[in-house]
Structures are given as C-alpha cells and as structure tokens.
Image 1 (cartoon, rainbow, N blue to C red):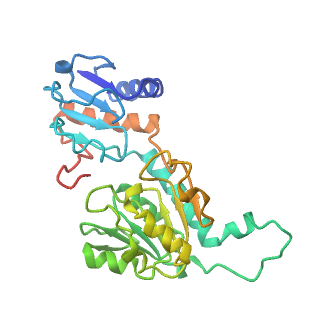
Image 2: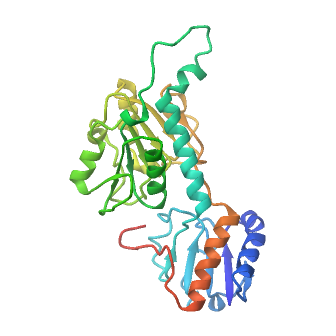
Image 3: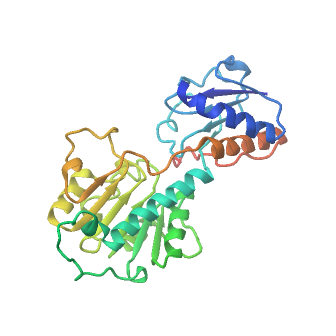
Length: 309
C-alpha cells in the first residue's frame, strides 16, 4: 500500500518519523514517500500548500487526508473527487481549548488593567463577576467549538453554543438557525468564533450582529478571519460597543503591518498560533484512518462537500 506525503519539504522532516511509528504500531505494511507515481497512490497525506494541486492523475487513491483542521482552500478543488478527511486531532483540540480558555479568562478577570497598569496606581475598585454571571457564546460546535464550550462550562460560565444544524452537547445551551444565532448573540459578554469558513459564515459578525452583544463585549476569534466584518468590528471597538478583541486569524496573513488592528488599543493580535496540528498525535489519526480503510471500514472525519466542511 502506497502513501504519498504532499506538504512542504520542511514539514516532511517533522512528520516522517511519527508517521512511520504510527503506521508500524497499527500493523500496516506500507510504502511512505513524497514521490510515488500518481496511479500507484492509495492514500495521500495532504497540506494545501504542498505540491499536489491536481488530483486527476490519482485514479486509485482511496482517501485524501488533510493535515489542517480547515478545508476551505481545498474543498472547492474540482479535480478532487476522492473522499477528503479533515484533521480531527486530539493534540490540536487540546491546544485550542488551552488558548481559548486562557484568553477568555484573561478578559473575564480584567488582567490587562494590571499587566499594563504598572504605574503605581492601586486599582482595587473594580472586581470581575463570577464566571456564572458572565454569559459566553461559542459560534461553531464542531470538534473544537464543542471542546472549548465544555471547558468553559466546566469553569462555571453559562455557555450558549450556536451551529448551523441542531446539536445536543452536555453542559451547553445549543441553538441553531437564523433565529438561534440572534438569541445566542443577544447580551453575550464574550463571543468565541470557531466556525468553518464558508459562504454562509462569512461576515457572520457584522454591524447588525455586533449590535446584539452586551455593551463592552469581548470577541475572541481563533476560527477564521473572514468570519468578521473588519470595518464593523473596528467601528464597534472605536465606539466602545465592543470592549476588546483578541484575534488570531485574518483575511490576509501575515496581517499587513499597516492594518489598523496592530495599533488599536482594544485589539490583541496573535499570529495564527491558537493551535496547530502536532505531528505525533496527527500521525496517529492518519494511521487509524488508513487502518480503517484497509479493513474495509468507513473512514472518519469525512468532509461534506456541499456544506464545505
């Protein structure tokens, strides 16, 4: 069985040994390479910035396995007719939970006033509410959104989650649809965005939806840049309607040096580091999916092309 690794050369250096360990542990007989003849390839381990752009020659490929959680840059590739699996990796999920919880707690506790206010003034006149009195909304209830929502609920926050289709998740109030979105955002004090990027989710936070939030609400976006109408968010930040935003993802990356987010006093920019695919845990996911295919079992984490994720 031949496995093609299609990603940047430096990524191969990170993944080769973990992949071989995981494939060996799964008891698979394989030939893993960056240079198989297309017609011989059974499985492709794929990053969108790798060399494979045209999937037409891969006529015998049974599954394309993405190394990234997002698939928006490949799902529209008309040559990709093979099944496509997105990366659902426990290491990526745990990393995202830690980043989201850290930044939500930072804003909830008002840590910036003390971290940046080391000027000799004794600021002891404002106390944060308890978590139970701070409503949080998580937009997107996939693997990452569900895990982050449950982690925040475990800390005592009342968490409302919204998704395009109905879901039931322990500890969360789950809403869906257009009316559900409005209800989820109304009076939310902290909003975490973990939706996929699709035509239906672009600019989901805009002037109208931002106006639903509690005055001075906080936006935390480790999802995708186009989920936010940047002009609308900047206007809300300037007016104080939105109190702060921590943004990890942007329409253009790296974020241009002259972008107003860099200098805005209410914005924290992080450089798309909220979480990442980790070779050791991702390799185990890849090996497990290949093993399922070799046993004739259904693949996991398949992308719905019509939904875009």
